[in-house]
Amino acid sequence: MSSSPPSPPDVTDTNAFTSTRHAISRSRLIDLGAVLAIFVFAAAVYISGIDSTKFHQDESRWLNRAHYLTDLADPFGPTWNDQYLTRGQPPVGSYMMGLGLLVQGRDLVTNNAYDFRRTQQFNHDIGAYPTDADLVAGRRTNSVLGAMAAAVVYLVVRHLTNPLGGLAGALFLIANPLQTWHNRLALADTTLTLTLALLLLCVIHLMRKPSWGLAILAGVLIGLGGANKFTPMALSAPLAGLGALLLLRAWWDRRQLRGPKPRGILGFPPLTDLGWMLVSIPLTTAATFVMVYPYLWRNPIGRTLELIRFRRAEMDMQYFLYPKFRTDSPAEAFDRTVYALGQAWSSTRGFLDWLGAPGLGDALSQLDVILGAAGLLCLLLVGIAKGLRSPELIVAGIIIVQTATIILSMRVDFERYYLPILLGFVVSIGCCVGYAGRTVQRLLARREERGGARAYGMLPASSANVTSRQ
Image 1 (cartoon, rainbow, N blue to C red):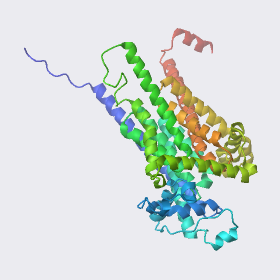
Image 2 (cartoon, one colour):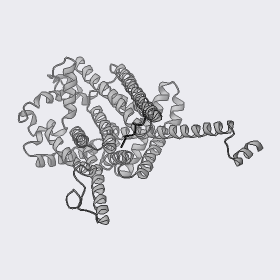
Image 3 (cartoon, rainbow, N blue to C red):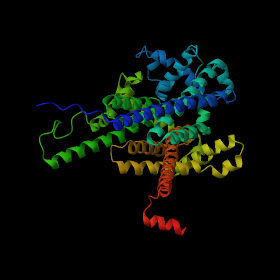
Image 4 (cartoon, helix red, strand yellow):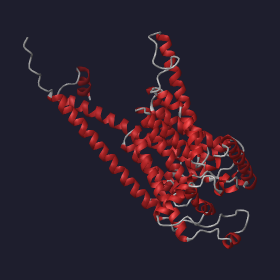
């Protein structure tokens, strides 16, 4: 038998493949350029206001604890004894502050801790005020971390929608006066914002291309967030819950099919399934939380419970000492959150004030809340339509759980408590703008198609009649 000659390659398929590859490369270049531009612009905005920002007493304590970074080398040393400063705040923010000082050529021998029970003069006398060099270095650290967070927000929203949405999300974060203020202070909250933004980006990739590496990274990021401020620990719940649902659904589907014996355990999918990866996240979270916090090593469970008791007592004391900041119910906490992010700390207001239109900023300040609510609703609807494995659904779940955790636990409405909620807000706002842009783009494309078809006489008869009557 004579073999037939090989068929020539399909030129159409080759051209399509080349075109797709070029489009992907072009898209990556656009993203890289946008990320760099956002980072540089945000860093310039934040750093430019460092010198004019009023000193915050909490800066004294975070700079004081910068030595925690090198004290990790002695995890059973005196730093990690059961004492107020070690117990009062998880250490990740201190690690980042110490790293920032070292990178800028400063040492970790800084000021004493500020004593809020005593006068300013007393704290001056005991050396609780940091030197100008240490203060500027600490603030500059947060400015850079804040710029990185803005760039990551672009990537988060861009992967959910498009570059327009990513740019909108990043700009709303940069324009927000609350975030800008904290990014010019030597505190720990900017580190948390960056950690949560990275978590969202990680989860998006995990849902689209599951891997154990990404699942472990998600748990590590939640653990690091919890070792900065406690509330992010709750974020492992929606991820594990979704994983359990995926496993149960797969188990039920296989049982209904009654096919051959599955490769998994007891009818569940194999360990390579996304469900197992998500279910494992609370374990990775807990392990990370303990590993980076040597105070817990001697008695992880007992001392974690002690941290919770201490935090409750501290919030009760804040509730007693600051009556004007009290929130007596979740409903009141919700109202204050809407006021804070839609009025007092509105990105729209901040942007229009910067443009020299404060009156217009007052009138449109609630635009943040409207766009944020609309964007979150869009994420939920798109996620529900795509199914349980959609990144949109899990991102919406993380935003909702993070917001609900803070509102339900809020006893006083200190401004820093709104920062994790703000991150979810700007992501939702970016998604709203991105979905709106996509809709407009599709409408314009359809209009162009109809115009082209009409020009070449390809419209149906009914459409042609309508056109002639018009």
